[in-house]
Every structure is written in C-alpha cells, then in structure tokens.
Amino acid sequence: MPVNMISKLLEKAVLPGVDIAPPVKIGGSRRTGVLRNPNMEKLQKGYLFPEISIKHEEHLKKYPDAKVISLGIGDTTEPIPSIVASAMAEYALALSTREGYQGYGPEQGHKNLRKAIADKVYPDMGIKETEVFISDGAQCDIARLQMLFGPNVTIAVQDPTFPGYVDNGVIMGQTGKADSTGKYAGIEYMRCAPENAFFPDLSRVRRTDVIFFCSPNNPTGHAASRDQLRQLVDFARRNGSIVVFDSAYSSYVSPSSGAPASIYEIPGAREVAIEVSSFSKFAGFTGVRLGWAVVPDELLYSDGSPVSRDFDRVVSTCFNGASSIAQAGGLACLATEEGRDAVRRVVGVYRENARVLVDTFASMGKEVYGGADAPYVWVRFPGRRSWDVFAEILEKTHVITVPGSGFGPGGEGFIRVSAFNSPDRVVEACDRLKSFLA
Ligand code: PLP
Image 1 (cartoon, rainbow, N blue to C red):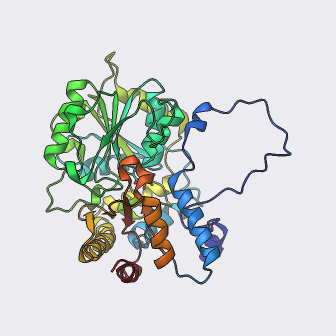
Image 2 (image 1 turned 120 degrees about the vertical axis):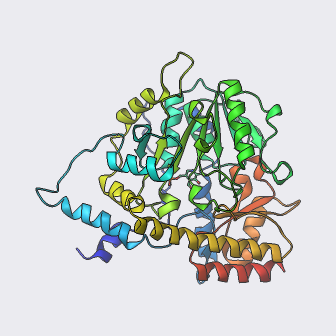
Image 3 (image 1 turned 135 degrees about the vertical axis):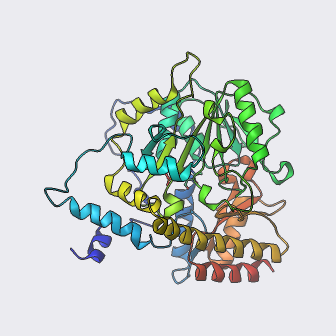
C-alpha cells in the first residue's frame, strides 16, 4: 500500500495530536448496574489539551478561512531524521520474513536499548541497564507509577506543572475533591513562580510520600539549578520521600546553563529518586511512543524491599513492553554519533524557535520566562485571567497558546507558548502577536 494511503488510514479524527470522542447519548440508553469510579467525578472538566482542541474547532467554525497557527499542545512538527525512520522501517520489514520475525520482547525493553540509555543518557551517573525500564512514553509511566504507589500515598507537585501527575493521582484515589481554586484536597502544591526563582521554599512544604518534580518544567520552561536540585534531594532524604523526576525535556537544557539534565547528577539521588523520560520531544516520537523510567536498585520502601521489584511487577502485569519497532528507532537515536547528531539538529530547530519567541515577547516589554532550556515560553499578563488572554489572542491573531491556569492555580495570569512548530510558522505567529500586543 502506498505510504500516503497508510497515512490516510491512520489520519487523526479531529486535530493533530488529539482525538475527540463523539458525545455519548445518555438519555434513551439502557444503563448498566455498574457504579462509576467516584474518583472520575472528582476530575475537573476535561483534560486540558482536548479542551483546547474544542476551542480550536469552534474557532475554525467561526473563521473557516483562518490560518490558525498552533503554539499550543506541544506536539512535535519536524520530521523524524531518516537515519531513525529507516531503522524502524528496516525492523518492520524484517518482521515480514521468517528469519527476521520476532514476537513479544522482554517487558522491560530490549537489552541493547536499555544499555544505550544507561551509557549515553546517564554517562558517569552509575545507572545500570537493568535499572532502565523501556516504556511507551512518560505519560504512561506516570500512570503506572501512580498504580505502583496506590491510593494511600500523599503527593506533592509543582504549581504550575504538567497535569498528568495530579490527574492520575485523582483517578487513583489519592485526593479529595478540588476546591474553588482548582486545588485538590490532600495534594501539596509547591508554588513555583518568578518570585521564588521557580523553586519552592522547602521549609514551608509539608512532607509527602511522593514528590513529582519536572525539570525543565512544563509549562514554565524553568530548568532547576544544581543547587535547587540538591535542596530537593536533601529534602526527600530527610523526609523519607520518593522524588519522581520527569526529565522529558532534558535534551533542551543548554550546555551553558549548568542545570542538571538528570536528577542522578545530584549525589544521594539514587536512594530517593525515580526518573521518567521520553523520546517524544527528544526525537519527535510523540506518535511513535517510546520512553523510559529509571528505578535504581538502592531505592527502598519503608519495609526495606526494593521499589524496582514492584515496578517490574507492575510493568509485567499491565504492559507487555514497548513496540519493538519503536525501540529500533530509539536505538538509532542513541547508538551512533550520526543518530545522536541527527536528533540534536531537530531539537536545535525548536530551541531556535523558543529563542525567537522569547525575543518577540521581550521586545514588546512582556514579562517572559523559559525558552532557554526548554521548548516552552511562559508569559505573564498581570491582572488578566489566562483563559481570557488565550481567547483574545486566538480571536485577534488566530494563534493557539495554552492558558497557564490549565497547569494549576499557580499558572493563573500566564500563558504558555510552545516552540513546537516549523520556524516559518513561528516567525509568522510572532509577527501576528507583535501587531496584536504592540
Ligand atoms: N511529561 C511531561 C512533562 C510532558 O510535558 C509530557 C508531554 O507533553 C509527557 C510527560 C508525556 O510524554 P510522552 O509523550 O512520553 O508520554
């Protein structure tokens, strides 16, 4: 079948990156006797990005000819380097031969990819290949980690932060209901704002069992400094907590910034930290789906048993391993200098977009953060509500951003602007934003 026909068959239902289910007719349908999981009722509205897609759809209905530019969802746009795509194609074709066919792989991932991640992503950090669990993406690992922890743990999150940690915690039953500000009872929200260098005063943070910490942070674009991460690791060690460190954007850390790309650069982290990471923003694998989690051998529960043993059990029980084709692609990103250079070049495109966005907002006198170590730019609109700013920008410029409040109450008054688009569209969006904000 020609490639373009395959693409058509797989075409997304509504908008890039998001499939929206049609509304369910409830009125006349027969009900089952199954009780709804009460935790699902606690979740606020829909997941942020489908909400934005709905607004995008409505905008297109209102302005059918509008050339909408999305600097919103944070989905990659640049093609996967051919050295990586060819490795996946070769692997897939070999599956059609008797000699090349392979079925289930190890649930924890192929040994050579686990080793490549240990050696190339964590050089000199003492990470062993057996501590690396290959997955179908960081989002899925976050859900599996929440399943591992269960309903009885307490959690802390940065505010604002990626919504997956909180929403999975809610579904798991770790929280009470949300209050009028959107904060769930039982969760410790660690405010991260320009006023505290995007790092909480830990002397005021309540002890929790688990601390989700994302650096470089989505949405603020702030990469925690070495000193900040030292404080975090010390805090977790003093309190007997586990840090889940999300390094999905580590490949965007600028070599000159000095910010650690991994929590394992901090002494003592092996005994308190799990790291989740992803090929999504590193290699354009948002649709291919590949990520990993590192669970060090030294990380123990209060009864002395290793966390990795239980995680292995969760992975083997509810996940049969990442696609072997995706893993072949992942290996091609890491195994050779050529592969590493190719993915670095694509990251470089988005990094340059981020610089253009920061310059644009700065030139208009806006308070702008992030962008230097992350593909996200965080812009403050004092005294305004994020959703209002989002709506006004969309209405006047046909540019999609993300309202900061979607990442937690601490994001109110900000918008997140993503660098994930082609350079010419980013420049075009900047021109439109300049004329709107001037
Ligand atoms: N973690 C963070 C901080 C993210 O921003 C995202 C996606 O945007 C994910 C995890 C999910 O990554 P993946 O595509 O690997 O599931």
